[in-house]
Length: 206
Image 1 (cartoon, helix red, strand yellow):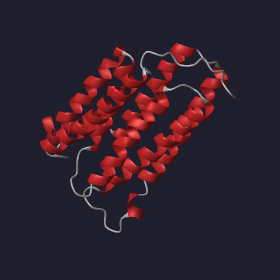
Image 2: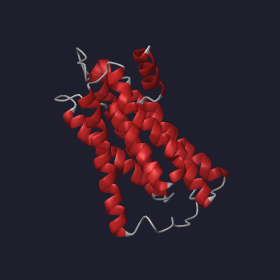
Image 3: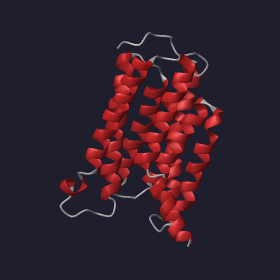
Image 4: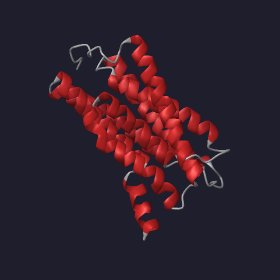
């Protein structure tokens, strides 16, 4: 019973869905601050959809990447896909000057991705946990009203070992990986004073 519930929880909040949910929530947060119009919203939605289309395409290529898929194979291609997708979204946001939150969010997830991809072949640290804690942690740092997302992320730490997908150490390792990058980003933003500065009221460039 517990194992089945943990597996259901893991599937419901899988990285490809949970990070997308957090990305949409972050766009909504920026909209509340800046109130961009329909054209601006459409452009942002198109960028997110395009980025996630690339992410899913890479994830679905697992069989093409590995002749015989290892136990960590899907985590590897999933991380690469998510990293490339969020990188593309962050680049578009930066070029269009749509705000600072999404590029920072993208930088955080890209950093987690690089480390995760490097260590996964040697130690299968939980990507479900890392990609739950990192985006949720960023959103809570941006607005405390997002705390339910952090509760979901922390629940994933227990769900993965209970589902039999990872050991407790691998699950805690995913938490530590994400927490380290969140702390690093918070320190950098605090040092530059970016946390207190409002987003520039730049016009949408549609």
